Image (cartoon, rainbow, N blue to C red; front, side, top):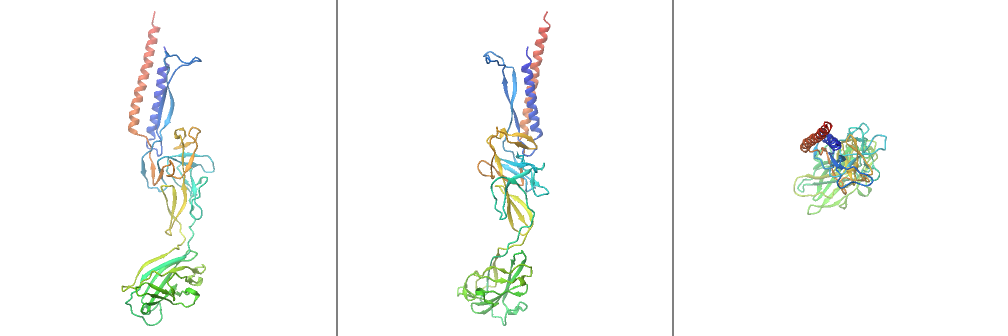
Length: 418
């Protein structure tokens, strides 16, 4: 009598129960991929092969196959959490090491040095951006967020548009900011010097004749000079056509001009500020004064206030000065045969020859999936199916135990023969 078949069945059923139990235990593990026991029959063989009448000697576990199907993506409150919708793995390296592992667990945060890491301190890999905020592809590097202040930008262009009431009366005297009776209206805009210090540029408009206006510009209560042509005349002129559009500015065809705010007027320690100022959008209609557009391209220095990750893995930093900047890009890795990856624990895998070459690219390109910021991919374990599989595996274990028991009873019968 042979107990081999029953014993192999018991061993196989026990291994199957282990796999099912492991799946159930990780049903709430982020990024976990379920496994499946795959069996093969076993035949005794010799140099002459097997006989057509030969009875098999049981079963064996041929493979515990990982199932890399998509898990549900759920929302979290952490902007650095990333769920992969589609194929691909995050690439990780431990601090101070070149060892590489891969994961589907997108639970990340910043460490004390600004690196994007997971719960075990593994650093997320990707491409970094240069000083201009442009991502530079190439060999992947550890993604680190710089907390140094973002540099300011000096105002180089500015635009002001408003309507000057055609029915306004002509005030008496020269423009004096302290005497509202000497001008009709005033408005202001903010400009930034090379140190990022903001200065208020105030405009005072005075009607001088039909279709003709003067205007002065002040910064810190100091008059700004420098009309076109380098003249030192502080007061500028603007004239209008009969249809209400701008005709000339300072006696020249309507165009942008470049005023200069002296360094002493700025008072911040920055150099003199010269920028292009466009007033060609002004109108003179028979309605009350009103500003319609105020724009300029400068801003102050700012510190990072928040992070976000786009679908293509681009990491954007939001700064206290209202600006945003690209800091880097997450890179995903794909394999021809993910089932060939070697499980390492901690939701990580290592590449093997069976998995094929690791191909790196941006999320959403090729076969790679996209990222969902502020979310994670849940385990792909179907808990209901696993519980049913457990019942089946239990019955198989009991059936194989009955097979061993039957073999034992037959053997006992033979022993008892007289």
